[in-house]
Length: 294
Ligand code: ATP
Image (cartoon, rainbow, N blue to C red; front, top):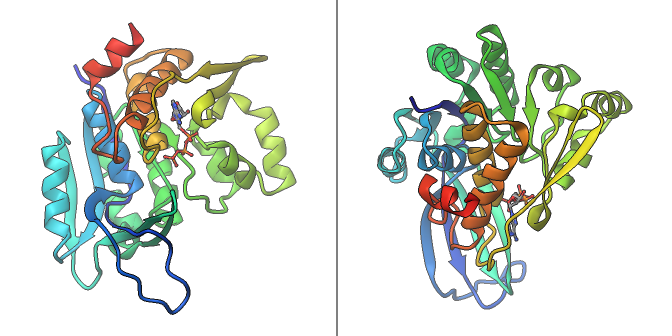
C-alpha cells in the first residue's frame, strides 16, 4: 500500500518574465520570454511526493479567477490522489511575480487566497490528517493554521515534517510539537532567534535535518553527526530543490525507511530535480530515483 502524505500549504501561479537586466526604479523595460508555471511551496512538495509514489492529499485555497481552476486541474494531472482545494471568492489566487535577469532573479510573492487557509479549513481536513502517515507543512499559509494542523496531527499520532520556509518567527511550543524540521542553513540560523530556542536546538538536534545545497543534508542521531552527501549532477536549475527534498524525505519516512535512507532518497530526488529546468516540471518520478540509488 502506498504511503499516505497530507500537505496543507500554498498553491501559486508563478509569473516569470525574462529580461536582459533588472529594471531601475520607475523604469519600464521590454522583456524577453514569459512563462506561467504552477508553483507554491505546498503544491510543489505535494507534487514531488505524488510523483515519488505517495498517496497525497493536498489542502489549500485558490481564488475564483483565471488561475484557480487550472491550478486545481494541474494538481489532479500530477497524480495527487485527493485535491481538497475549493476556489474562494473575493481573494485572488496566490502569485509569485518573478523577474529573471543577469543570471539572478527577484521575486514578489502575493499570498492572496493562501491566507484563506484558515484554522477552520484545517479542521475540515482532520480526517485526512488522521489517516496520513506524514503531515507535511511549510510557512506560506497563516501560522495559526500551521499550529492547528500540528495540534491535530499530535492528537492522531501523525508524524509532522515542517519545512520552515519562508521563515516566520515561531514559538518554542511549535518546535516542540513537530517531529522533524527541514531548514536550509540560512533558515536554521533565523529559526533559532532566542536563547531558549538555541538551547532547545542543542537538546533536540535529532529533530533537525539541515539541507546544505550541493553538500547534501546533515542530521544527528544519538551523539553522531552525519552528513548524507548529495548526488553529483550537471546543474541546470536549482529552483524547487528544497521542495523536492522535502517531498522525497517525507515519502521515504512514511514508508518506514531509516533517517539516513530517507535523506538519501530525498537527496537523490532533489539532485535529479536540479538537473532539469523548473520546479514542478523538473521533479523526478520514483523509478528515476530508484535507478540513481541503485
Ligand atoms: P531551494 O530554495 O533552492 O528550493 P533550499 O535552499 O530550500 O532550496 P538546499 O539546501 O539548497 O535547499 O537544497 C535542498 C537539497 O537539494 C539538498 O539537501 C540536496 O539534496 C539537493 N541539492 C541542492 N543543490 C544541489 C546541487 N547543486 N547538486 C545536487 N543536489 C543538490
